[in-house]
Image (cartoon, rainbow, N blue to C red; front, top):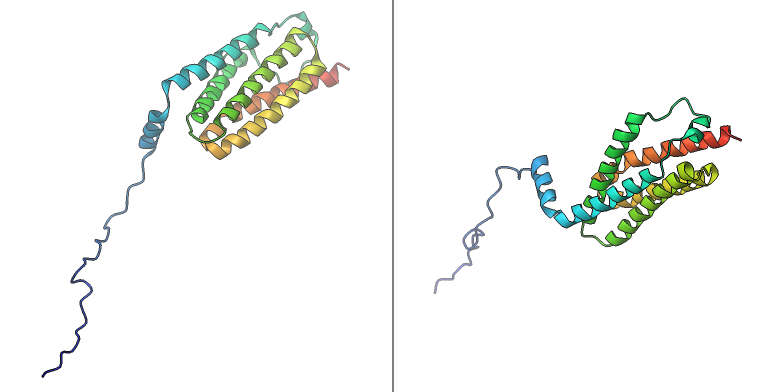
Length: 192
């Protein structure tokens, strides 16, 4: 009886090797990523956040009274002009609004905590205007400005973990807070 030798089976006889990719997968374009992100935003979040930011900006203007008291204060050489207050601060608030909407629509834990931090920052902003322009308490407004600056730095650091673009949109407001703190400190030091 002839002996049967075991023949090695071909590796490709039963299964086919996966086809190799000839081209790399295309990276999504900036437009497609923006469109995808835009589709994740709920319209109600835009309305709620927009309403809150507009309310804070309107309330804060109620306490801004550029009276003779303000002009009697020692002024630094670098000061904000009227157009900067009108257009610059409006643009800064628009960027903050966009950042809040972005952070609100990221489904990660801690979203509500972030919103409370923004509300606290808005209240500190209103209180700075009330203390400085309304009650003429330069020392108290300076302490309020330090608290607002520290809070905004913490918000930016927390936002950076969630969304880098949202954190970067907050940087102009942080610089605005730095400016009012410098301005407030200058007046405090030179009016002693």
